[in-house]
Image (cartoon, one colour):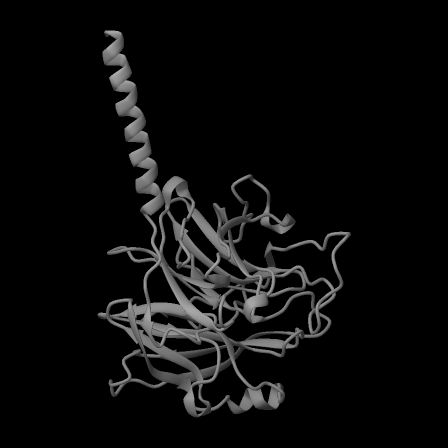
Length: 348
């Protein structure tokens, strides 16, 4: 090949590589949200029919629990209801200081919608995870009714884990699992009964999925946090291609412009692990690959959930704090799986 032809070919190859890099970089995108997206914490997303529903931590207007937001296009959102009018009486008896319920996790299993949720107090691990079910998410349907099934799992003061931030996952063999955890000894998992959604009696092992060791030179714990405060929480697990992916939130949430949350990820061949990051470091030894970190516009992106959609874009929904006001707002991004690792974007 003449030298000039080789030179032109190299330019074409370079241009092609740049185009490929550009395509990969733009394969994931942050969506523009309007309406009732502000004020959202710990969002969990699902779709029924032509409507997407997001469940979130916190009180709904009038004092109800778990305000629900709805959208038919993923951009315009509106408040469309709540799960509970009041905190269930059994929780008020078990944890009388609980004022609001946390970290809803919505899924569709065995012909019904399951909502795993948590109750606790800041800085305490005297916590519990419970289960409610519904036949539909359509508020206008005569079949719409949440049925609370009570306690699934609890942690006590002498436990080394915290029973909050539940996430339901069904493995590729059709078996059900519950991931959970916050601070203390990190992210844990229990096997569930495949029919009832409560804890399995056949497998009672407490599996460890991720933890963060406290550095020797770590600063003292902030107020209302456990001594080993290097935080990893908000687990969410999905299966993609040949791997299970464990998404978690690191560092501190819920502090407005001082929030330091970031979203991390690792992957494993088995739902119970071992999960590793891109470098091969186990998540049980402090490993984790960054997915979402703060930018100039939004602080503390975390509290994430993922919607895997075989007919469209996979989505990650999370909250972040407005750098100007310090108030939380829902964020949505499509997910690009280039290289068998997830990539997402934070809004600008």
